Length: 322
Ligand code: CIZ
Image (cartoon, rainbow, N blue to C red; front, side):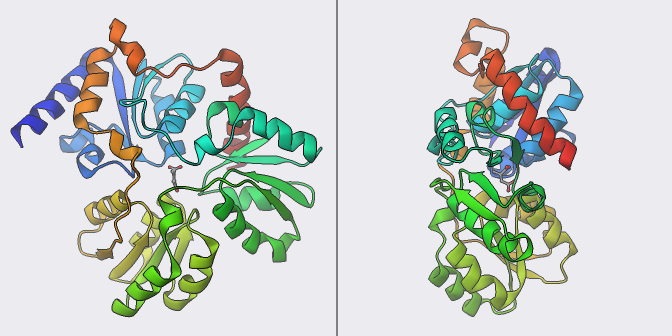
């Protein structure tokens, strides 16, 4: 597609001229996940936290985040001096929007002294009220390590229930949960996955933490596989002897897996995140063109300094924990 190639070439040129880095999340369409070294636009491809940390280490003056808004906010918190652009301000998240800073203050009043663990899929104002953040990669370890016999985990109800199942027996800890859910992962059902397991009996199951606990309890033990984060899933496939996998996560993680492991087969009931799909090459080009012009405000992440400073602490604690 010559038009697409032209847009990619222009982004590559503008990146160099303007000293910007482009981050691309694993849920982005395949063409946005091609790295700069391979002729694409992404300086880094990864999960939200890995991307924000990688960008902060480059000390780039500008960051264009091909992902959703809470991710771009995390990049801003970790690189407050950089200009952070999101190619579409419509790229939200059902989890992040389910809870506000005020909601967390309410929970802290209701359960005084109980530590608050906030999943990174939250806005900065929510993180600012938490004791520590976690990603789906380190949530289990962090939840287990927190002091006391109670823990407020927010905002993903299903992920919280999945964590609770795993830590209750070991630590006796009780999780106080919020009612948020990911509008992609909540759509997976036991019948759908069991149907695929019957069709592909050799396949291993790759299932994300945000998928309803009922699905995981009824399917994972039937075929083996992993309950994990995007990064855990990618690593697991690389290490597994299996040739065939069923993926219960965002559809474009399937594109990532096919690109990394072309010799393996992936059965993907394709559920796409409508927010992630707000971002494409053309909108990324528009953001890149706007950088350093008055139009930049249409794409720029603005965070109150105080919120930025407060949100940094729980993220820092998580990074130190790791
Ligand atoms: O934090 C991320 O990047 C998301 C949305 C999921 C994950 O498992 O990495």
